Amino acid sequence: MAKIGSAFLWALAAVTAALGLASLRWPVYLDNTYFLYLAYLIERLHWVPYRDFFDLQAPGVHWIYVLAGKCSGYSASGFRAFDLVHLLALSAVTWHCARPFGRAVAWAAPLVFGAVYLSSGPAVVGQRDVFILLPLAAALLVMRLGIPAPARAFLVGCLLGTACVIRPNAIVVLPVFAPFFRRTFLRSVVPAGILGLALPAALAGAYLAMNGALKDFLDVARHYWPIYRGLAADFTPPEGTAQLVRHRLTHFWQWGPVHWIVPAAAGVLALRRSGLDPGTKRLAILPAGLVAAFLVYVALTGKFYPYHWIPFAYFAALSSALCFLALRSGGAAARVLPLLAVALSLGISLRGARLDWHDANTASAAEISGYARPLLVAETDTVQAVGSFGFAPYGALLATFDLKARPATPYILSEVLDFSRDPYVEGLRSDFLRELERSKPRFLFVSREWAVPFDAFEDWLEERYVPVRRGKDYRVYERRTAPGV
Image (cartoon, rainbow, N blue to C red; front, side, top):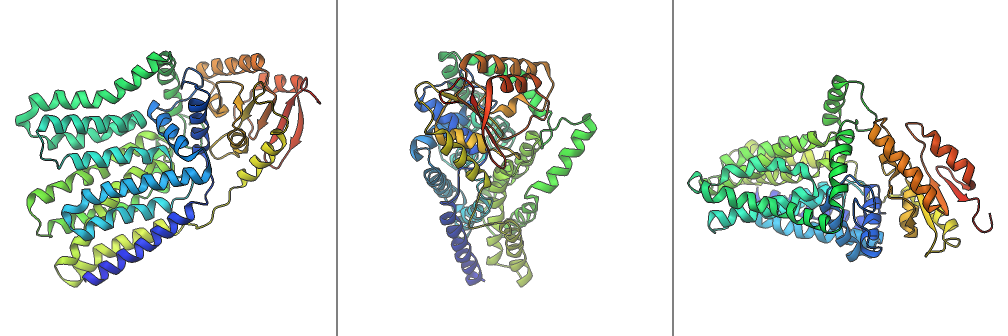
């Protein structure tokens, strides 16, 4: 049976390595285009999030992508290399987390997750949800340290707080970690844990306050976050609470790798029969609890996009790796069935994997930027993309990123101005028009239509701009008063 386990791991390592090498050719895709462009504005043009551009993400997202941009040079291949280095770092921490359960489990955990992660394609890899995993995995490792409980609580709190300034919904993990601190230390542990948890948020708040952006961030959190949470996965506002709940339950089962619950449960059962000491067995409760916590995390996002499931997939992979413990003892069925559960779930996850990936939006972006680049005066000309990074064509946004052009308004993603008739969004639309009128962008790149009609913008565009290029899924408009128009 040990030979079967070894062969399984070697085959899995080969698959994961092939997917990793193939991913180096993937383009910068969907959300990553947007966040790398914002990172460019922050690092190179010294823009401040929320003050200089409108965005609904937590501050930690921008710091992660600034680091990615600096390390990658804002290139597609560089970003893929950055993501793979991050995956290797995560795999190293994961190996150490799983090492108490044996070498087979220690190797299986990062390999299973690596295969699932890389098989998800460029729409998932490098997404902000994956960047909360390293601090969370490090927190699992800290829980094993033989240091005083208050110090351990502070370190774990800092790591959980770091995850929360990237994705605030990560707070769902707190009830999983809390019971692992003995009650005899509560008086010292609770303040230390709270201090550690609050520290990253306090540093983020201090950064925003020092740069005059805290008020703008709180304004977005107070007014725009509730609007966004109320939209369905396709950004359509549901007709009533019942439709919203029905929509979310449907997508919960359709879009996610829920099938990984089966091998995760099989791994926990294999642990019970493994003969390991109670202290080691107790370590497995944390990742199993985090599997459940990240089901709640996905539900809180309300959109159920594939990348929202990555933290769930990670901790499910960690628990599923325990299935290799079943190879140690028991009858043939008891040894093989847990491993078969892992193999079947891997087959489901890998069936959609592609070693090559061609994005039609890349061609559109190349056409747009190829036309505009010779005409732009970098010091004075600005551009405005009217596009999406979701289901609609996003060539306009990708072209803006390719050009590294200075944006005309704070609304880099015009999608935030759509899908709702809320008075707050109407106010944003009015501000968008004022900014356009003030900045007078040289070009507007349009790759989507407004879901909620925006007649004032269409009238403004027709009066002041002329279409100069049209593609399959985009239009380029140039200011009528620009030279040569």
